[in-house]
Length: 215
Image 1 (cartoon, rainbow, N blue to C red):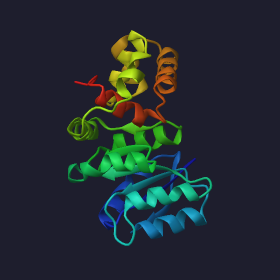
Image 2: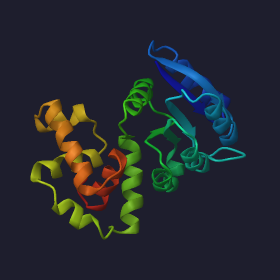
Image 3: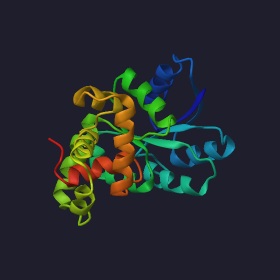
Image 4: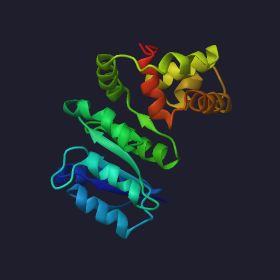
């Protein structure tokens, strides 16, 4: 059972996400919070929470600060930042704060459920729509100095995989696009993360964008 916390100051969002997630037999909504401080208190009370959906803009304590403070809590849940295009300036800050995924509030029910399961399984996600916003933001800041060296270490196929990660594709979609088996894709992803020094899939996506590998 995946235990989920929902932190958003809008009751309508909390109710909507909760209604969707409660339809799934393997997902349990364990806590809800209207601000970042309530969210952190809920996590401290229930160390079994696996995944947290956290709004960036909340009163008392915003989602970015709350995500950073999770680092001091043992067995903290993986955070999926819930954002809008108005919040795209905060996406890179959220990555640095430790967020494992990003969703737009208008995402489909299927995308929400898939995101929770993906992050609970230890992977990171960056939705295709949010990828576009991140791409614009990263390009505006210029390439990182370590990008060329990191990408240079990759084989041509690993470079292909990195580019598709940067485009927001999951492992299944990458396998279909490149006509590879799932096990082969997982091996390539593992190699990409190791060779580039990326903390997770989101970090690799940012690297792909900085290297100009995405459309």
